[in-house]
Image (cartoon, rainbow, N blue to C red; front, side):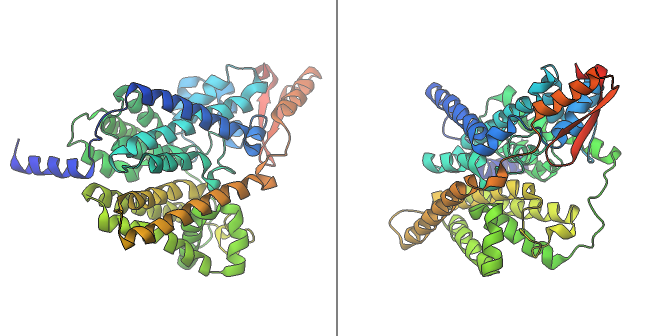
Length: 438
């Protein structure tokens, strides 16, 4: 081994440290309990309960219909929207084995379980960076309770890739993870998200460290996703001209502000208080991040920098690539359109914040300042969660999926050859031959 290679490995080891010890046997019992509680929360909150009987967007009009009409192997490698959706399509193939009336519940339960898995990976993977178990628990819990994540993206496979991106991020940083299950998760998540390319630098650094299975699996999935994206076509949402000022304002509202308030409440705060809302959110987020740069070790400072950069990169890329006039901040309800764009950036932002909260030493005036910031963050998020739970339009009220299937079966019994299956959101549907209905 050359001196250069040794120095590179030492640098890699300092920015991606090995946790003190792997999870012990009792920890796995805690993981199981947390997993069950997370899934229950996502399914039993009012909006989650509605998802058990309402099929959402591409879960029906793309993944279900393709699973019922086309061979499984061709579906798994079929791009949609310009990239692969292998994991959602794999879930659709399994759901297609159930009675059609159960499709909505099948997708909702599967999405909730996978999201809970991401939360567990975040908790375990952050051990080398965040010493406080309560802070790690809070960071992982945000994957489940993040207000911006419990409307448009709740319990559906169509939008799961925003959470999968965050899960892959922590899986790559989790050096003593169980090799085979985590490698499988990383590969399936990588071939299901168009944004995983931003994580390539972490995977390359991991290659200098022992236990290379996860980064190699990631890079293999990245190559498959890249090939699919090169060969696929993508229709842009619109051809509206991009306004840099609007992109900046929308980015600031959709990440630091939405992180503490949820998307729905921005429509109240921003029209009333204007850019003061943004300044307050930046201050609350910026104080612990600055503390992270000052007090954390090399690994912590690197994580603050990387997580903050990913937060910016993801939200700007999403807005620029999907820009439409409905994303402008003066539009009524401000950031309701495209709520999904806030998920991963908010989770990355909280990662940078929590590293700073953990790194600040005790018995200093800085601790008092950062401690106040911690309480403000906690109060803001908790209040936002409770307020979000009371928003009536997070509960789907369109045609229930079993009713849509019942109508279709009645039409087939009356002699129709093909039927229309309607689902959420409004005006979404797909056509299915009666021979495929059973």
